Image 1 (cartoon, rainbow, N blue to C red):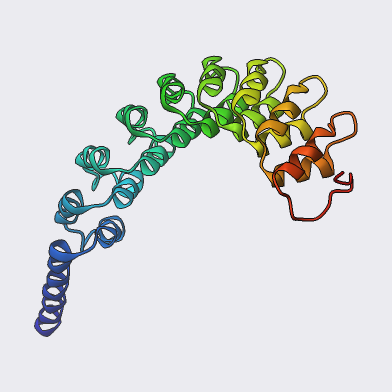
Image 2 (cartoon, rainbow, N blue to C red; image 1 turned 180 degrees about the vertical axis):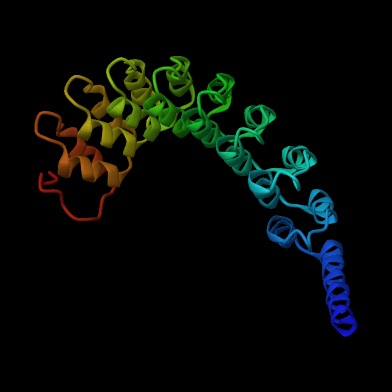
Amino acid sequence: MYQHNQHNDGKERKMDKKTIALIKRGSAWSLYIAARYSHDSRYDPRLVEALVERGDAWSLYCAAYDLPADRYDPRIMDTLLERADVETLYHAARHLPANRYDPRLVEALVERASAYTLYRAARDLHLSRYDPRLVEALVERGDGWALYLAAHYLPDDRYDPRLIQALVERGDGIALYRAARYLRRDRYDQRLIQTLVERGDGWALYFAARDLPNSRYDPRLVEALIARGNALSLYYAAQWLRGDRFDQRILDALAERGWRGPTPYRQVR
């Protein structure tokens, strides 16, 4: 019996050395794994202390998500809020269980998130966690693509008409084209076409002239395409615009730009 106890004591001392080494030098992920999965007989609270001190955003999120209650330390959330990138903040705000969720996660998203992450949070967060300031921040600093996605996909109880205004003011040609083509009728605004005519690049103008339904089509799109389109976008317009939207001046503009590629089926004169 004495020999058996000596053997166990040796194993415990060896285990302690490994744990101490992990606490001193272990990576953030290894600290999380040890804090999460160590058997109670081998668990050491200093693992969580070390995780709070050295943990990266993802290991802290995972610890906040699923550490057992008797091992969880609220400082994990405080540290996560300080260190997390916006993608981790989004996942934490969306997926943490109710007993670990902290409204400061959404506060941090409103302050720091990129336009696309703001859109995802506004779209995906549960009603109990959603904050209208996500959409307000998107209106204030969103780029054209994120604004289009929000205007298209947000549910009615989260949609804000100011998204369209911001899209008109800041959207690039492709974002304006997609909004003009895909927004449903009660969100569509004629200013999208007007702005596309004024500042759309050749490709956005070509796609709009080709794809928009008759109810949204404007002949000025082709006028702008002739004036500003590059040779390749003009070639595709000459090749694919349907007859009632095609303008012979497209061929003239194509020739002026020195097109040397394949001849469109509407022969260059």
